[in-house]
Image (cartoon, rainbow, N blue to C red; front, side):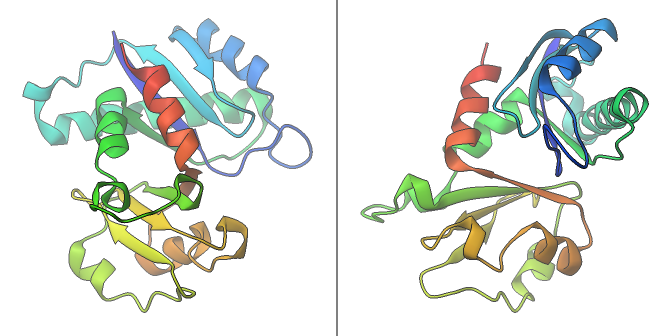
Length: 196
């Protein structure tokens, strides 16, 4: 069994796209996933699955396993809750790498407050050239950096996520891939939950 993290795009506990986490945990367990856990009420799931995307399998096989699981979880949510919710899946190892590679934290003497840090996860990798070509509408002090591999954009947003133009919709329109963002506390919590 391999541990995975699923990030759901735009789910709620009430209203539109209502997906109660307790019911989702029960549904996933009934579908055969192991040790299903959720974090907060905003669509963060840690679970075990029989897929085996080990390091020797190569990046292509790992990506295929994650995509197969994303499709399966999407279908389960659609059947059980009637919601068409985008699902991005990463291995626990991928998320652990994201958690330690934040360039804003690694920069010596950067002085970045963790509360201002976020990570936007992309369903499809973006190229360095496409990202470099963006006319990023950043406010003073805001920064964005594409991670190696192109599936994560690290954000420094000193004015808060609610006030930035660097939101999911912006990156989805400009890069042509579904996106979902998590604050840094959530990234670290999910990395810890998924570590074995």
